[in-house]
Image (cartoon, rainbow, N blue to C red; front, side, top):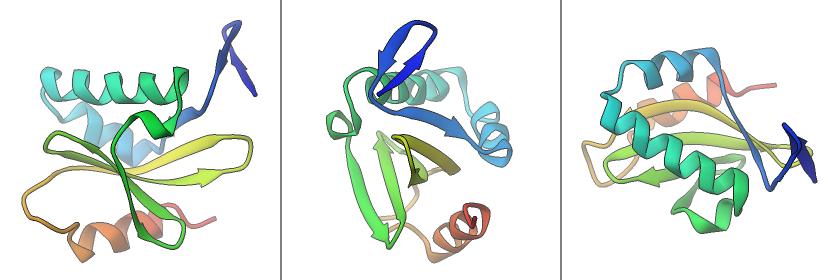
Length: 105
């Protein structure tokens, strides 16, 4: 269980600095959509948003036309390594490799 500002959260969502820059480059509406999903993860749990397994230790949060690639850490922490706009059916290998590189221990 994680306590953040006196509130119990299910998962703590943390963005790497590169992912934070990608987040800041999105429109305010897109940012709002992601913040909403991240808050749902914080308060209710990861099972309340759309996710998909990509590779061992790499998953994606599906928010409309946006994707947040992440890994799980100990103590119910989710590390967002990459945020991008979806342009195709599958997650492009380029984004998967980039997220894996960023999220290496």
